[in-house]
Image (cartoon, rainbow, N blue to C red; front, side):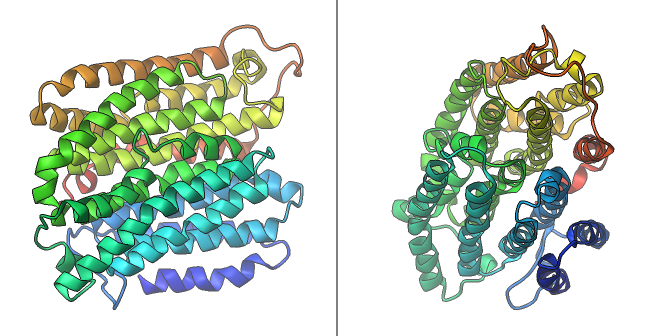
Length: 446
């Protein structure tokens, strides 16, 4: 693990050199493929050092982080073209990847907390530095206050665990269950906000609407997964209070998922629609997680990987349209089938994956989550039915409104995509649909 981390550290000075954009991108691609070859198949920590280790859970999310960060650089070519502080942008992306790497591979609870919080800082700079509207300041404040306020109890909970176990090593701390309600709430609150759960999700649409494409990709692709990762890591210490109180979170996340799906049907901003659909998907992940079943844990992990690739690809598509039409409004981005015929295929492929059509990884994970929730309580079938129906409805709404209808008269007659954009979308869609052929690391990792 340290060799990957050191290679990232040595990559940071290279970022600051003039004209190093494509070299850094190529090196990151190479590192992603080298990391793939490590192929962790153990459900225990392997490659242990004093504070770093890796198991299947962290391996999947580390690979996702590498992949999304490479694709962020591919998508943000306009930063390079306009010379918009491109060296500093590269530095931020590499430092964010380094922090995410440390977060997912920390075996020490305090270091996990430290890196979990630190990963907000580069994201905040991405939104404030390369965002589009002046409202990005408000979005940054929302992001900061929601996450920081919720994570202070987590720090207290981590120290309580360390004090009662005389160790902060994750496997020691979460070895047996605690019964205190306050410990339970303090440990899961930060992760619920980070996922985000319905009712504490208001920072997410704001951040997505104001963020540049790279910020949206890393936010939807990896940072939302930090909450799910934390819950999967910590829940073996919270089984006893979890059995008593988890019904609250399942109810809130399922009802919230349906409400947010209905809100998606009223959106006119492409980014806001995709952001709200992320809240609906993560609501399903949270519901499955809180059932504390094998199906729920494994399918939640699988949906986190699938959603990371899918929503990141949709944000790329929204940005491709935005770069040409100058707007993210569905009223202007309509009739894109006439305007950019070759992009319609990618809109269709990624939209169908978003509504969990086969053969995407979303299908496998949603079947597993539905299974876990229905076996937990058959009453959840009602909400799950609505959730599945409305998620298909808003995806169809997104696709049909953007691709069909009359082209807005204020834009050019037609446009083509670049090879860079096609390869970018290809690299989102292929892992999303081919990973189902190798699903046992995702579905049998416990």
